[in-house]
Length: 357
Image (cartoon, rainbow, N blue to C red; front, side):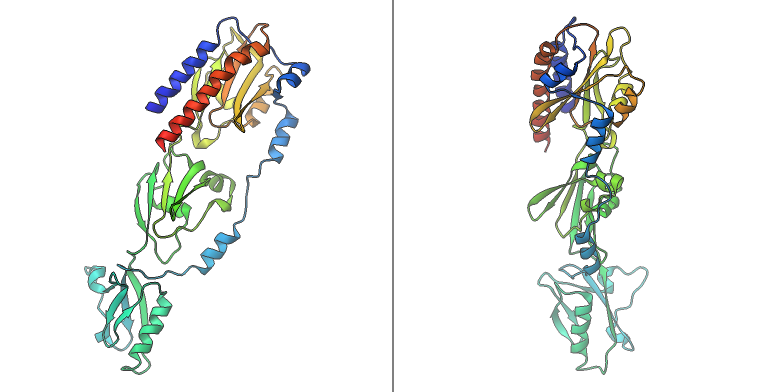
């Protein structure tokens, strides 16, 4: 709610800067060169696609971790043992018997007690290593013991999933490796309000931003990772993933970016389209914060293929779209009025983001 209020105030500030009679002229070749405006054309969009590194990307490190993964027993895990032909050494299982009753609880010091074997430390060991250890000890009393060991309850290693997921909570790590995408799935999946582009994973005190949306939509496997005990996964909300629309448009305001993706044509459509009585289709401008500096893009929407270009122009969070009105005011005049307030809007949104985080 605070975010919405701040945004509305910022938009009112911007609206106040654009007084009646002030319009942007369609930049000609000279104006574009002088003012650094980038015209949205097919060739410009082609260059943009060439620099886009998104897409299917392999993750050899993840493949290696998954292939070599072995669960290591920890304190509070519960183990069950089966010794073939020696039922007296096997705790019977039952439909109504809890794991605590069926198995051996690993104590805080990492040990369990087993008949004939006594107390042995099992923490940090794989099931195979525990099997070999107990078999070797039992061999002193039983000829060629055949033994199996399993984890009846995984309770030593857990991860926490918070934020914009359906069922936030704490989930155990089992003998199947827990990846980031699986953790979000266990939490019921992401809500429609989730900002999957910047999921934050806290590991050993360090916070890492992960673009889960690129994993889901582009197949970028580098955005997946194996989680470890104590990791925290936070899925933030997408309140800052929006575009601001001003000028000669039917419904000026804020347009949300569902799943963090939106193109210029969608922005115009969701804002009700141009104000036919005042809008100048030659002058559609997009203000964008780029390397801490404002960048300006311009689309001439009079041509038949202009809206096709608009469908290919991807918006970024906190872009400001301005549809100019008809008139002959100088570009330098209007940009000098708009840019300070647009920069104030960006700074305000950044402050809100910092406070929320």
